[in-house]
Length: 193
Ligand code: SF4
Ligand code: SF4
Image 1 (cartoon, rainbow, N blue to C red):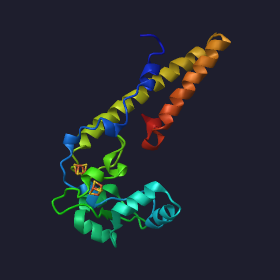
Image 2 (image 1 turned 45 degrees about the vertical axis):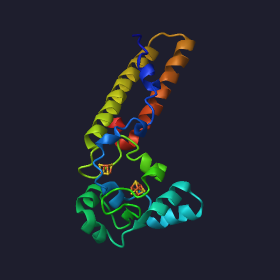
Image 3 (image 1 turned 60 degrees about the vertical axis):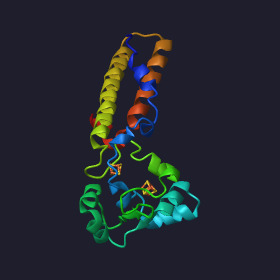
Image 4 (image 1 turned 90 degrees about the horizontal axis):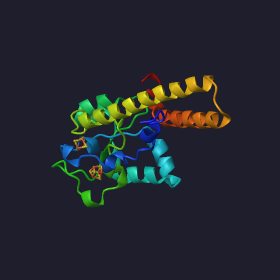
């Protein structure tokens, strides 16, 4: 293994998370379809949909808003509190969720359903069958970021010594690509891992 071994790790293509998600972990509890929200307000979503944003159109085609946060709480208080909310938050339920917790359009469900949970850091309802698996996936990413930080440090040390212009350019490129990878996770606190 050479000193630039983590570059291999950075370039690994594990595929999208949802493509290798063990679907059998889903408990078919319907919680994620019964109480959902987005980072955008309902008004913003409607405006985006009017402007032709496909993600907003898809979401609003499936989900209808609860009138109030209290109404959503009556349906699933634990999930509402787990997600968290402020005065601008709207919770939604899917029109296609049946009383038996199954989806009435499972075979034609949209990508936003197929891909959920889409990232290792996706917020899932309490008791979701993917919880432990997502934690394992998160830990893999955290370990990778830590290894890359160590690798970046070693490159920075090399740059302090004598090295050719060619090597200097290469090391700076490696550092830049490590920073790009780590920045992908900055919103999850990668700077502190
Ligand atoms: S369409 Fe089906 S899978 Fe998608 S949110 Fe609705 S009930 Fe859930
Ligand atoms: S909350 Fe989790 S376990 Fe329940 S239906 Fe959704 S993905 Fe499956």
